[in-house]
Image (tube, rainbow, N blue to C red; front, top):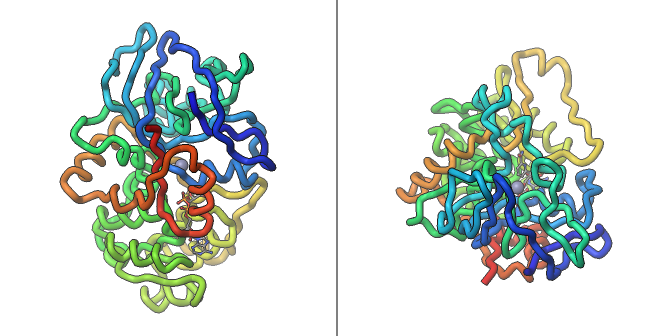
Length: 361
Ligand code: PAD
Ligand code: ZN
């Protein structure tokens, strides 16, 4: 079975033949149909984030078909269409009970194992690290990572809900809770940032100001509802936002992953405004803001996975897609076989794609 494996940062990602054990109690085997290339995958390859778990099967955005269930599995059965969620939801911990399953205390993404420490992927008998491992023809995950979805939406494109849409739209609606008429700035309009723009449209924001360095991203942001576009390679985004908003935005989202652009987002908001860090900061990176502007009721917040509640949020997101109010097809700017994983990362870094969706045919 083919999988995209990261062995070390020098050699990068390679397609390898690996073996996958059968699902055990509470586990499910999923045949992948679509998987999105998110910048968080590339952060592991580039070393932007601390990452010692190698060899590691990449991929955390994905959709597929259930092929086999272990004993005790009750919420899915073979043949079901599913989207993989970034987080497990044990349903028993404090955060699950408080309606914040993205912070489930049983959750193990980032540890490179299934709950309990098992590693079902092996190569020549040696276990590989993997979380959701959506960059593989098949994967085995705990049942609670899976959300069963309606069968009448294109399954490959639905993978985008699993990370980019949940994170971006969720950052606006679930985390920041943007109010109707608010002024919203989005700094970085890639696969996740474009979904912050979509979230702002769904929240009925007034002015939606898209900031990027790539014209094609700004054009797409405009086509999905941004009202103003700022090319950060040509003009100072903060100065321009101040002009457009007459003194600062209500919300500014940083969706790249650098302390400098988080600071830029903070500088874009008015007294009482909120700066949301969506991008994953570099290892050891510190975010700092000046004290006096913060004093004037400004808020700085982080967001993991758009405060996502996958079993609640994925179904309505797909309903909005089916009725034309949430865009997925437009965001999947390229479809490639998983063999072209490195070309997809190159495209991402050159800024020529919003999201690449991998297929496994
Ligand atoms: P992406 O590479 O598709 O998008 C980044 C965008 O930023 C691109 O359009 C770039 O052109 C643009 N950009 C780069 N530098 C600048 C700049 N100085 N000014 C303006 N625009 C710029 O990445 P992505 O959308 O897949 O991911 C974005 C970040 O979000 C990344 O750090 C990723 O790890 C993070 C993320 N966070 C969560 C979460 O839970 N918070 C989930 C998923 C991804
Ligand atoms: Zn992601």
